[in-house]
Image (cartoon, rainbow, N blue to C red; front, side, top):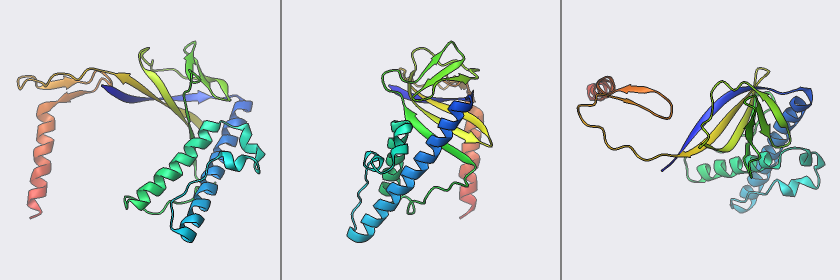
Length: 209
């Protein structure tokens, strides 16, 4: 069975890489807001849910060609997902992204090993190439990198590397086994303590009636 696990690290881009990262943040925000505006206009005029592509914006906005195209594609997917949730009444109408947000991010995907760890101190990323990385937690060799989300929070840069791995489902624990340690994250779960929390939660719900 396949599972996903994310690894978070701090990165230290040089000045040139930092400029490109911030430019990508801006382009992703521009694409997201433009696609959302257009989709909103189409919805108001026709009642239909139609999402344009980032490629359709590049002819009039040449600066979009300078950044990672997959980051722009993911911005489009985010709009599409937000509209789907709205139409299915799982969320409110999508909101535009603001420049004033203190946390900026974009997501890119790994295609043909385009994202990888090198020398245990560099993260290779599309357009950015080698970025210095604080590699404090090793990613197992059998874990496949799927995507990376880059974030700027208060001037510091971080990456969340989403991986995929296969693992056989463990047989059901015997009643005599009172603890379980997750082989993926290392967390040890006390079954008696966990059961007590569940019972307390049920008790609190019963007292409401």
